[in-house]
Length: 123
Image 1: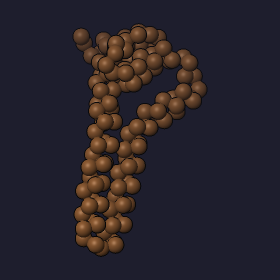
Image 2: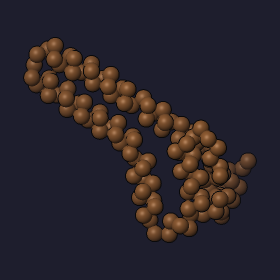
Image 3: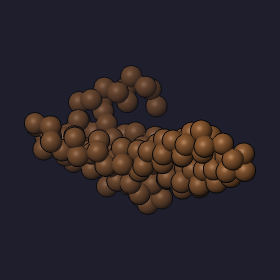
C-alpha cells in the first residue's frame, strides 16, 4: 500500500475507529510487545546487577564503595519503575487534554495494542 495514501486516509479519519491507530495497529502492537519484554527484563537485570555490585563492594570492605553501589542500585530501581509507569503517566496526560473525546475511538485502538499486544487490538 502506498505510504502517502495510507497517511491521507489515516489523517482524514482521525478520531474515528478507522483512523491512524487502526491503520498502524501492527506497529503499536510491536511496541507493546517490546514494552512487555522490557517490563520483565529490567527488574531481573536490576536484581542481578544490584547483587553483583553490592557483593563486590561488601567484599572490598570500603565504605565509599558500599555507598556508591547503593546509589547505583537506587538509580537502577528508578529506571525500572519508570519503565512501568511511563505508559500510565502518558495515558493519563492524554486523557487530561482538552478535546480528547474527539479522538477517543482512535486512541483506544492504540492503547489496547500497547497494553495487550498479544490480543487482537484493532477493535
